[in-house]
Length: 216
Image 1 (cartoon, rainbow, N blue to C red):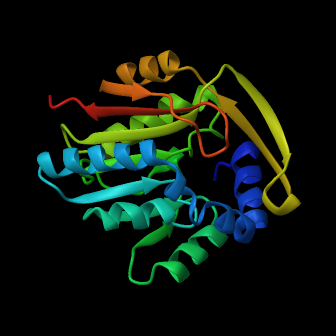
Image 2: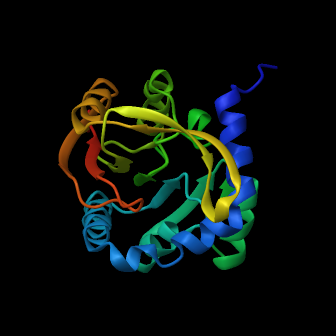
Image 3: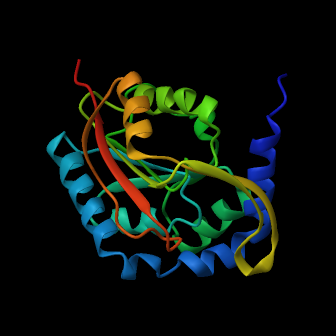
């Protein structure tokens, strides 16, 4: 059996450690992010226009965005690397599907998702693993289905050693320009529809990129 890469183990352990304080940090975050809410609304409209169906919130954390997507009428469910965050998501959103898993090996059937959202969950994925992740996104999405990404804009990476509530973490935070993510998406078989740069949840430049899996 192949062992997990250290960055994946570190990310899981870090978010297990900060799970409670991170949940409090993000609980009402969307209330102050109108551009994000508008992007989620546009995403929801595209899901419905393409036939509706299950929507994956990949890297869902405590499920706050999953809950918002369900508020918009989508059949959204969540997956996250951190077992502790999934416990909290299930606690705070009874009856909603949440499961532990990794975007590097999504446990969903081919063409099973009517939409996929990765909201600031690609930020800990190394550059050389991004094509693998996007290949999984492409595989699980139905033809024509939308993909919405939220990410930190920039061109640098840093090691984060202290996180929410002052708890220890060990995660690399990768900032990327729109053009790099757009190129990766195109190479993976997606068509980029739009992108913008509102203020991010972390108070720095954040990007929103909307794409869809090609129909053919």
